[in-house]
Length: 174
Length: 339
Image (tube, rainbow over all chains, first blue to last red):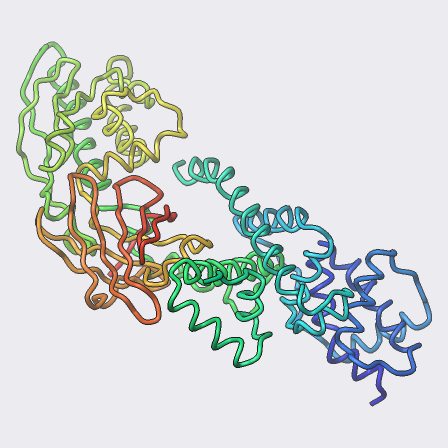
């Protein structure tokens, strides 16, 4: 198994999930993930793999992913072979969960880009050193960044929830 | 003593600090109540943010989709399926008996202007039961009524005495699509039978509250709830909405049932399972009525959590939670239980 295959197997799922959460679009997330692995394939040495991949994916989101048809096909093939099924599987959502997801999306959009990325990386299990490296932050400021991101996310989500709870109460009553 | 920095607390909770730094924060948290609150709050934020982020996914990791976790409709009891609480059933039964009796009598004795007729009253203890299906309210003829167009009927049990007796008038029924004055009796009887329970309950409680039955649908749940609470009090099942505020109070169980009891003294609190089954007694947790429609529930300390108390008001979706000098409104949802 070459290095790209190993990287793909190990990091494809977390990257797609991170990017789907970040972008709210599974196809786009897949595209950026592929582009990330293309970059990895071109890279001779990668020191901190996970931080590197997340940094590249994050930058690609910022810069808009570019395409590479040939490698993409190869990666699609790999993906089929790997039959990775432990990432976000689209399935019909109940109304309640769709509402939750929409509120979560809205709340997440209220965060600054850096706070949002740090939080989503943390949720993918990246440690403070990795987050600092991926986002070009000092390690000391990661905690503050995450604290601010979490507080804002929860506060906005709850305010959305309470402003929507009147409607839900009406539904429940009928 | 300088308080802990929020970023440092998050770093500690995220496992990003050395053992010594962690120990220092932990020790500080023990000595400084304000920092202990900050730590608890940070824990809540960490958990809350994770929950919110994972709700972005179509399927949450490691969580069985809710509809699979629930018992199938076939296995759910009639009580659960109809969203019946004993109180609602009691009110519904009361009103159904009253309405159908009224209609029957009107049909049979059309010319008679005033007459006596029996109505139903429901055993207060039974309606107060958390695990009620087996103790379904047994209607018992109690009070006679004299309706020309008015049914003077107390729709509720003893605790509702102060709510005053309800005047379920032909007018209020009309607002709920039942109009004994104009429709044919046979048709009416049918309609009374097919009337949604919730409408019956709403009609009864709205009338009891003197608000008339013309209120918008939006109010119906609230009205039904407060009507029910007036009769049954607070002994029922509740779920604490697991938001960041609730996570500050770690002694609070996600779901619990207040065991029914007499009107005074402390009663036990039971655990309610994820699928709404009333389970074992929650050790050392007690509740007592503090007024007609309020209760105080005390949850014991389960280290490292602090003991917490909850002040519940019937029909309200929030309750006042207190623990270690911290008081916040938590969101509470009355839920239907089964044995």
